[in-house]
Image (cartoon, rainbow, N blue to C red; front, side, top):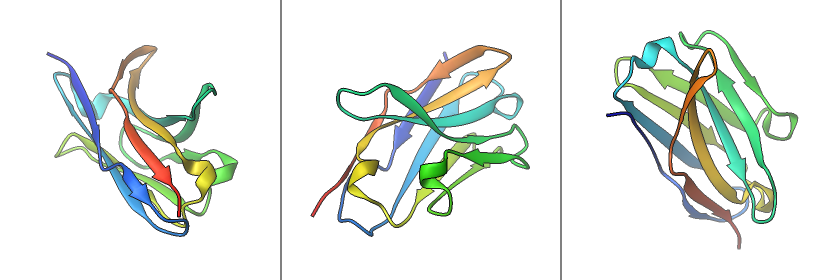
Amino acid sequence: QVQVVESGGGLVQPGGSLRLSCAASGFIFSNYVMRWYRQAPGKERDLVAFIGSTGATTAYVHSVKGRFTISRDNAKNTVYLQMNSLKPEDTAVYYCNADRNGLGYWGQGTQVTVSS
């Protein structure tokens, strides 16, 4: 049974940090590229970060470059998103996506709220 489960969200003050985790099971994790998306209320789901199957390649949307870091541990079937210098506009539900040649799996999302 395929499972993709995000965790680590919460309420944080502006300038703070959070580390999201996404634990995968039921498929060969190391064969899949991974992406983090986010969806703010009333907006579309947008790509935030990408990491290749080995972890050697990463990419970020411009608005999070230098603040967010995506990484993965294939031995633990887990991908991470370290988020620093958080801003109120980072508030959203964050989703993890596993993709291999268009076959993808989604998690249920974790809420991140940045507010004082």
